[in-house]
Length: 302
Image (tube, rainbow, N blue to C red; front, top):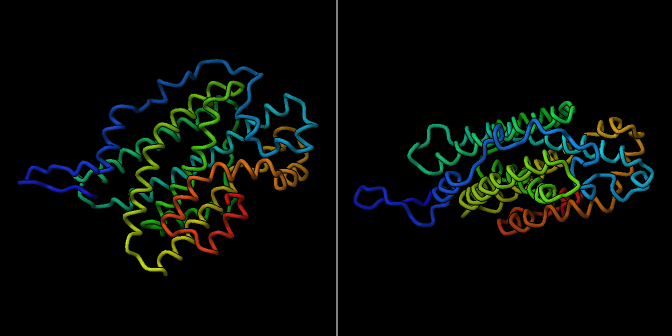
């Protein structure tokens, strides 16, 4: 927090990030219950996400699929990504609440943290309703990932916690900026993506500021540990974004689909594109060490 007081009046520094974010939230926030056209019929010819973001786009299997299969696959993929988003937003909320526990409620950091939690609750409900509207049940992370997430939300703190938050937000942000502009994407997905992009931009700014403050002046050992924790969090998040069940739901051979998705050079390139700003920021914070770099490369984020 960078606030200062003058003669007891609580005059805030003009550079106070959280105060500016609170002002932004007051001026531009959404209510998904009212701002999404939930009753609108789904056009059977429109995708769940831009085809270029499908894990199979550009593969031999993609070329063999019918148009109906491609549409169905992308709808299941976007619901898998939304389900992963809900899972991590629940982790995020618990970490932020724990971080702000018994802190000064007059502090703008505290107030924006609670504003972010309120946003995330609405986002999770919005994603759940979108999946229900598409007739697709939630895709849950793998059991091991669920347990690792349980440990992460209970133990991660400071720059490691906010780093994990930033990973999830940044990668999804780039994807959704494309989806919200996709003319061949369902209006339901375009609108929910727009809402998420606008409000998550404030969350990312807050996470970056928290990371800068928490890592400033810390020693090499602390940075190495945090770098590894953030990279492991990235692995858990990214590896669970698209559940392999989406392939069976689209009538595909799951083993073949998983194999082709794993070796899909086009999707690897898209992942690197979505991670560019994140990787640059982590480098600036000294949080990309050799072990962390190896994990990011395996995830095709570098």
